Image (cartoon, rainbow, N blue to C red):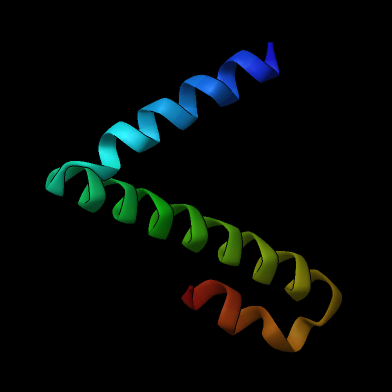
Length: 59
């Protein structure tokens, strides 16, 4: 199942990269994903180091 999903995602990504709006869409999606992961990382770090709680709340 995972192989089929990754193959479909590969073809969809390649198709989107050929279009101008598709590249913008992929860029926005990547930035939102990255921001979510950074936010989660800072929250986990704030659990270990309470000094970072304001930074975790800011992001």
